[in-house]
Length: 234
Ligand code: PGA
Image (cartoon, rainbow, N blue to C red; front, top):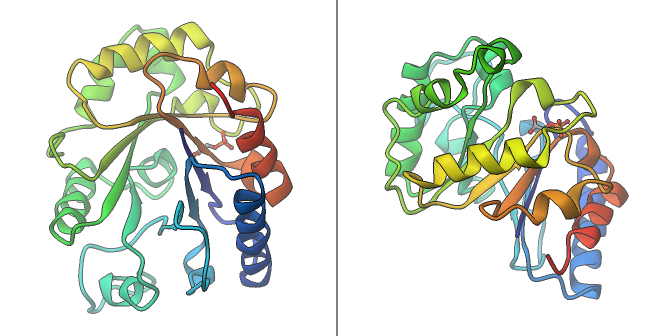
């Protein structure tokens, strides 16, 4: 399984250091073999020293340039400094709140693909789209300009209506969408949207689910570790 934690705009630089240290101890002590990803804020990126090889630190976002004049953004040079080779692209909060267009998202994808990054590419429908039964059509449109054959691609299906609400999508719904995606997507498929320690077992048991992308329930390290623990042996 893949367990990815997206800090979004949470946690300080000091707590992030403590978080990674505690997480690393937990992983080694319990001989966890899963792939673990942590996406801290840009200001908390760092070299975290000698940590388990199955923990990867990634960036939540970056502009598709080496460097330049893009006020407020970071580029490849800033990621290289911390040896970051993994990035989230297409998260619904960037699409909806930050108004990132599919064109810019595809541009970011191409740039970081060219740099050999592992890309966790997010897609997800709104409640309205779902109510109109247009989910799959909408999800496919979010792949416009994206190379589904990229070998370092991971796709995260995150229905917007389930993000941060405490109410995850139902097992049958996740199963249906992931199975439909599987026809064309050969990369690992993650589910995201209110994943927590009480529903991880059920979500991890879904046939095409290769892992989870977690927000709120992963911001405290104890809670993230509990999710990883509860997800074992699925
Ligand atoms: P959530 O966020 O776990 O708080 O629902 C998931 C995400 O946005 O990746």
